[in-house]
Length: 345
Image (cartoon, rainbow, N blue to C red; front, side, top):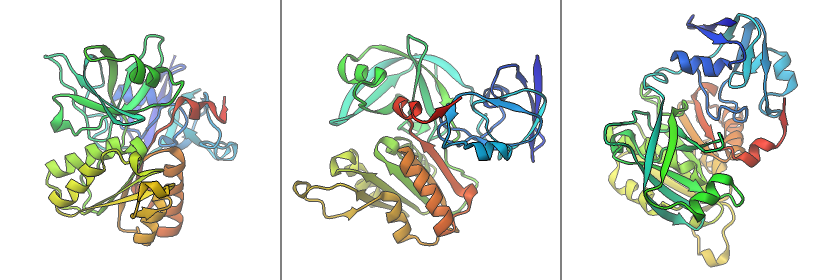
């Protein structure tokens, strides 16, 4: 059995198989619904069901509270139609431009960027190329059928190798392997490109880039891409970490301030110790943005990192700084531990 999905206000239509999620069918049909994690945690795919009915699979209750679901709101990454439906969603131009592929890759380089951050560079087969937008991610396909998502940390024009930044989560199935057993020339399979977190190039608004921890990876790709495109839009990067060592490419960011016109860099540390000798900004990174830019009504914000940072930024920037809701773009880095918390079915 198949159901028809109609997207408003665009009027685009696609079919969805029984048991298939709305988002999965949209990706298959090349329709650009916004999304991030694909597992009911980040809320990027939230929209409204105007007509018809859906059933929700496992998701985080805080992402779709029962009261919102009662109002017709839906997480399309875990919503399966029960009838033909009409949904309201903001389509993302260009999201379906590049084919999603499953590819083998060879580990070309492993480099420790910090005690708990590893750079992994992947070499594709000679005849293959992965087209993607800076900010998108890939999913590693593990032997047991599980997947792990990592943003590509280099811009598309620098695609001789694809790099990802892996933070060690002790006890984590994939990250323990990366930090303990992985070696150069190992083969990894992945699927991509995925996600709708990328620069909206049709806008001329100034850009705030907000990163926490390894949320820097897709932000780095976006900055490299913008520089390659010679964008004239002002860009300010706010990168937050607990300790100075968490800003594992601090020197590169300082180099950008010297070489890129209209680029500013504001590092922010939340838990500096006396031995760190830190003399820069302290506190929560999203609050540093609010201190510097109390009026965000004319800006676009691209935020990536820990869910608490992304969620706090979205809430406060919109409520207190006048940021238009539709100008906040985010990729919330949810770990398997995050997904296990507060899930409902």
